[in-house]
Image 1 (cartoon, rainbow, N blue to C red):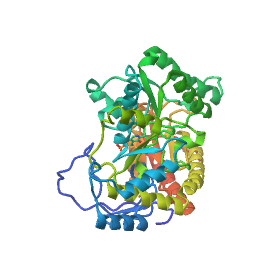
Image 2 (image 1 turned 135 degrees about the vertical axis):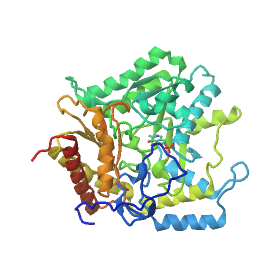
Image 3 (image 1 turned 120 degrees about the horizontal axis):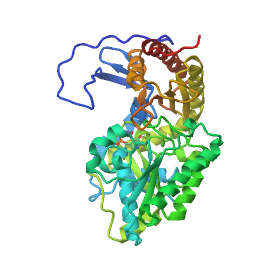
Image 4 (image 1 turned 120 degrees about the vertical axis):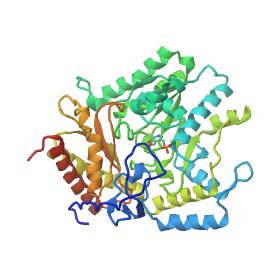
Amino acid sequence: MSTQSMPILSPAPRAPSHLFYQTRLRRPLVDRAEGIYLWDQSGNRYIDGSSGAMVVNIGHGNRHVIETMKKQLDKVTFAYRLHFENEPAEDLARRISGYMPDGMDKVFFVSGGSEAVESCLKLARQYAIAIGEGSRWKVVSRFPSYHGSTLGALAVTGYAALADPFKPMMKEMPSIPAPTAYLDRDSLSMEERGLRYADTLEEAILAEGPDTVLAFIMEPIGGASTGALVAPDSYYGRIREICDRYGVLLIHDEVMSGAGRTGRFLGGDHWNCRPDLIALSKGFGSGYSPLGAMVAPTRMVQPVLDAGGFQHGYTYAGNPLACAAGGAVLDEMERLDLIGNAALMGELLKAELINLAKRFPFIGDVRGKGLLLAAEFVEDRATMRPLPKAKNAFQRVVDIAYDKGLIIYSRRTRGGIDGDHFLVCPPMIVTPDEIGEIAAILGDTLEQLAGELDLPVNG
Ligand SMILES: Cc1ncc(COP(=O)(O)O)c(C=O)c1O
């Protein structure tokens, strides 16, 4: 396909399905995938401009990963961890520790992001009990944010549309505003705003009673719910200081921002962060196998094990096939320097998005790091007032791009209630030519969106 967008051929009529998902939306049946592309069964090609749900970091159809998994399939695919240890899990845990901040040397495998977050919440709680601080149970989180769909992870998620129906079933947890400094129209510098947002954590801890607060959970670089939110630099260190002051554990949810996507292995590495617990998933298994992990320091794991053990676990955790896939994904990240490429290609793509913002004044902000990038729509840049909710721009932009052969990802920006943004996060193998192709289709998409929703375009 050239840089011209190509209309998608109508898929063949389909029989009613016995499957159901979140909505009635039907999509074509996928046929195959390679590199940054997917094909449906009618032969249409799509650029995977969101790496699925920011998952397929190393791209589709990687031969080394597939061959490694085939070899593992021939040896053993599942051996329950209470019956056997396995080498792929041992190797992967050792290698992952090498990418972590000092002292983060213990790995607990899981099969996804929600499981990784649940594990962090539970280890934090058991650690507090083990060291005689059982009064601590509250986990402060940010609004908006996303930490997963299971009830524990949802209780610390700030996205009203997802959480509201389940509120009676969850323990209410305190939250503070996410550091949306780009929206502020005060006279403070970005650095001052960063400190002010961080200080809301201290206020929340004091209001709740410091001896009841267990942990603070945050995405170092935001994901779908905020549209790749990056806090001012001053925020990160101040958060650590406040957690230390009150004995509150700091949990970094790196499920989306980790595994190299932002141009460093961890999003928090951009600020040399030292969290107490880290949740990983998505790009860690890169879509080849469900895989996630909680990473913790020995100083937290030891007291829990000494006190009788960690009362938590999942059947599929640490199985040899998933861990072999994870090891092979790391091999490819290292061999092809994909983290370096994510940093470089991220710069190119961000520059393209900034160019699009010149043409389309309804883009109010472009943000993110590496290949975790987003653009937010507004009605008025001066006030950052969102587009009218009824226009549903966040859904329409995805559908228009899809019809032109580009997959992007979107959500509402303001806590799931209001606002629109889209994320563009291609696999970390993306090339400069492919970035050009993505930008051209995005330009056509935004042109059509502007026409349909009566939004301004600069000539
Ligand atoms: C930051 C973050 N945490 C947790 C999750 C939950 O991961 P999963 O959908 O694999 O359970 C996600 C998923 O999007 C995420 O972005």
